[in-house]
Length: 85
Ligand SMILES: [Zn+2]
Image (cartoon, rainbow, N blue to C red):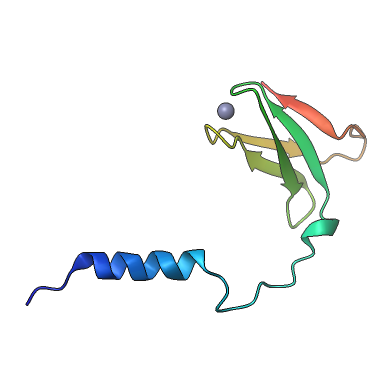
């Protein structure tokens, strides 16, 4: 009797979408700095967060997944909002 491949896939998605089995890690998400980015490509706003090593901000457009990156420089701007063209 051949196995039903859907069983396997359903099991995977349930595991991925319900993190209740393992409690959320105590990541200090609230204290992570972020930038407000206006994605001109789709006309939407999205926050992007600083990378773990603190050298850049990286994220992507929520609609078209266009990647954006901002380097953190010693004499960089203190602005918190940018437009990704
Ligand atoms: Zn976009």
